[in-house]
Image 1 (tube, one colour):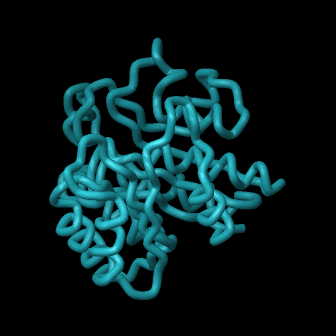
Image 2 (cartoon, rainbow, N blue to C red):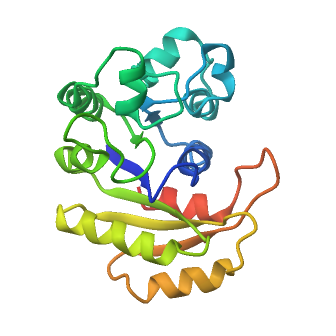
Image 3 (spheres, one colour):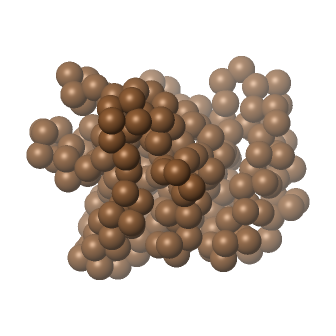
Length: 225
């Protein structure tokens, strides 16, 4: 069994898109795979099919039902805000220890490969004093870091890698997901980041046609799991 935590340098970078591509690559190779996104904000039940949780379920070949959504994403909030703020809007709070316990149980019982997708970026708050980084550190799983190719991404990426290293987290790979309208070339960005990264692969993922999640990058990442 292999488990990997997928995080990013920020929100709307491409975590779910990457997870879907890796899921399909693993399934094509005949390997067992499951995926969880335990915490999700901006969730509307009427639009469950297009939610991150729904897209993961579809990639896995599962029906997008209320039960499957609840299994995949137990902590769901309506407001498209950081999880602590979204929970507060509903008079709720996130018990981070419960989230960690949920993930550990999933890791212990998983067959094949398990992908755990985080929420937002590395330092997104989950509770009063805890962040996604604390969640990842408690689990201690290898991290797949997704970043963009926008101007400024080099600093954001290297900062994220530094804090992950300081918490003793191993990096499975860094994936640069091409940002729309960036003045910086995708390959230029990859080469600049790779100069500062040792011990893990840095790969460039170009923008794909709408609806497509097939690219050799996904197969390469699946082979590492």
